[in-house]
Length: 314
Image (tube, rainbow, N blue to C red; front, side):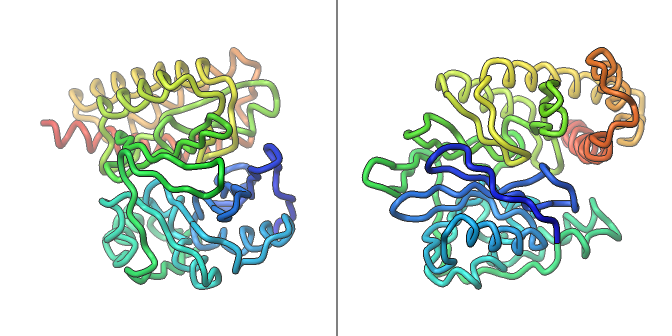
């Protein structure tokens, strides 16, 4: 088991690394220390052991967890929810109304992920445990959840990455837990002084227009923080949202070109990787940097979603 201490982002929010895909700084669980102890995202089931260890290290018992919120039901964000809930007897799971049925009966989710991840599915995601309906609470646009005397979380519907995606606004830090709506933050590069954000356009709900609207909506909120599903927090709101918007435009234009030419998603992924390499070379990031293992996977999945979008449109 990897050894890494929870990261304290301030006196009430901490981040536990879930080592999704076996990689550090990839997917995390946020812990909000309020009267009602609240977790945001579980990651996949193999991450649950890290969450439990991290909570103990932060001084919490599993019985203290009151809410586990998932931004959407993709397995890298919510796949471990059933497993974690079994050990948190007093917790409710909160999910978008369109996502709840997939956690109660995860067959469709599992089939979709198997299609994308193939032979590595079991190692990355199992076990997927169904969640009893009476432990689920649904929250969508305009709903709220009071977790402390001075903290009422607000839920926003933010489609684009998925139709069942919520973003959670925390008024105390003036920040949002954005899941995948505004893309991926590559901590591996940020640590080396290279801010880098890419959109996440995975199948099968990707919609560029909806994603642009969601990004614009968050931009207009004048936030102080964005907490990413992948991974960590930024306070540089303008730069991060502008960057992800520019990459989104490039992803879509390259996707349209590949689609018109009759190319497959693998060609699109290669072309996007070439553009990313050119960009990062200019920032002195070597071609053999470890981060490319993750970037390569992200671009493969994003290319699948873009081609799926153009096929449906046609």
